[in-house]
Image (cartoon, rainbow, N blue to C red; front, side):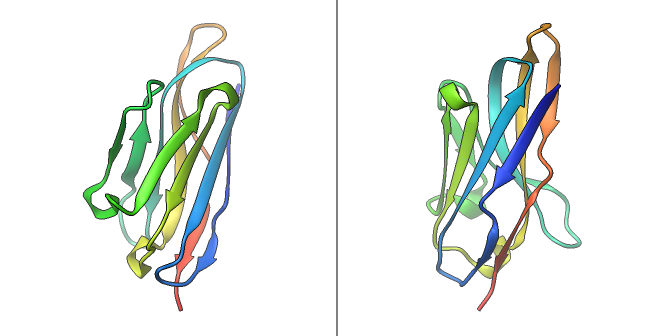
Length: 120
């Protein structure tokens, strides 16, 4: 019913930048929160950043001042601008959204993940 498609991952050198995008499509009435999570090898998935429909954002302490989350409500798209990347940012990044469908069902939806590798 609802799909999230991520793009923008890849290989970048330490200190570099990447921009992730995630577009939601399907039977969407509204999207409250959208966010990015990440999972590094051998570690649990963790919240990176999240943003409400009113553009209130919160960040993990480890990315504050380096990452910026934003969203385009008209396009049902969320972005993650990642600057000053560090090797410890290497992970699979997952998009997440809290969706109310056209039939007024609540769904928590996940994207398929996009790999970000920070290495020289």
